[in-house]
Length: 162
Image 1 (tube, one colour):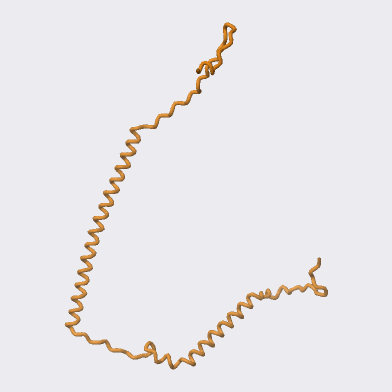
Image 2: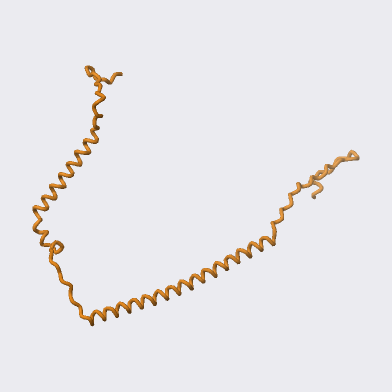
């Protein structure tokens, strides 16, 4: 089967020319350019339509506000409130530290008890020693065959059991 087109000749490229760009790269560039154009036109539309409205927002106002004056009595009350809060926080942290110390001591005691129990269990296991091996089973003894010495027939085994 020949898939070639008749009348087509194979084209030899000039080695001095740069390689042809692939269509995928060209399509990507076109899509990027279109996206940028859409974004730019949208921004221009918003600026044109709502540009004056943006100036009315408080964030865009350039008024400088003077700091409000506070009386010295109000400032001292604020300092005392902050100092009381710090003192209360310090007491809470000290109580928390004491509780953590108590809990860590409890954990340490529990770890020591577990270690001693494990040591006692190992010592008891060592004192008992390994378990004795069971004696091998001996095969059941077969009854010796009976032999008739006088020529008389031997009684059957069912007769003996009765």
